Image (tube, rainbow over all chains, first blue to last red; front, top):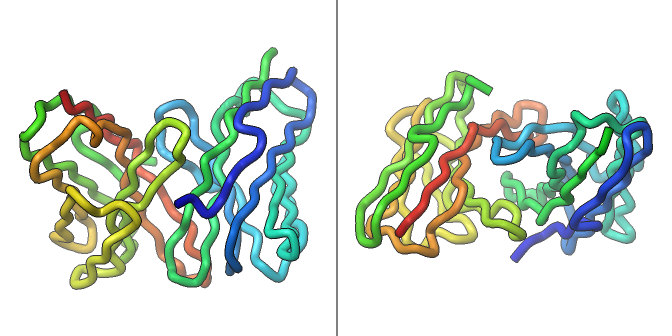
Length: 110
Length: 114
């Protein structure tokens, strides 16, 4: 079964708008990671947040983690058409492997 | 991206055939993984290997086998392919030297079983 569930499943916005996607998970984690996948391609690591961190930034990306609610959010600011992709959260639970969520499909229209 | 390569990129085969998907990496990572991706289900772990002598089953290993021929090579076999094994298959590597298991993915193999 999936550890992470992303919400929404699909998101459509205009260029320049912010995109927020959420991830909920079930068990305690060591860290949570976000990956991006362009259509039919391999996943690319975006950002990692450790269980003792609450917020992290990388360029236009902001990730938050609420371990009490077992949830994380990924915010992409000032979206561009090139941000169109699927975004996956992945949790590392201490067994030295990742468990991926079901993904959010983001469409950014020019 | 070229650090992790997968062959073939696309394969169409028939039910009952034996299929091997190959993965090679030049990142020097000890850990390698095989995932399967189906629409709406995200990625599911098939097998993983933490070094040449270590092979572990993942969430959905039934119907699959693997071989770790060297640090750089990890192959996935479908002994007798069936249509519900039609999916996108990804190989990944990791080197958690920073105590975090960031993974690096290959471009994927699209497998169709008729």
